[in-house]
Image (tube, rainbow, N blue to C red; front, side, top):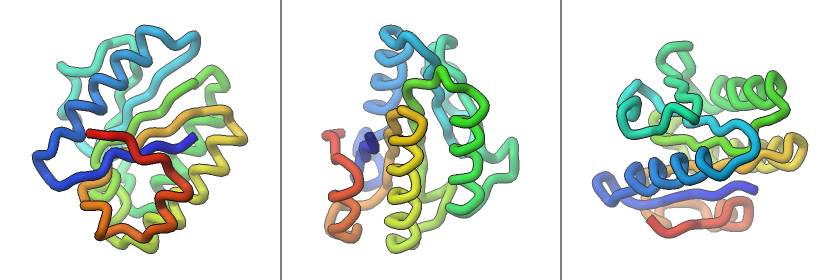
Length: 140
């Protein structure tokens, strides 16, 4: 399953994501991962979730980003949830590339039995309609 939180900057996406991470970490019978661009959420995310900053690994672009996520799933079969903040800043602001990325992540989600949730700093109208067929929108 792939879920997205959309909205402009300052709309509360990250706050909702942190709540989702902490709730999942408290109830999951497996491992929970939170991915962000820079280490900003270290004090908000519970220590029961693994926090990964993509800047620590020089991840840039959707291909490298997908490789990181696939590697995380391949290395730990006990992961139940992966949450990602600042998706467009890690990948790119190109909506067509975002769609391709989410399509690949959807297949990864099925293959690894891992739920993915992404924050996307854009309004729904700025995104291709096909994205909402690949990912379920959740309210911010």
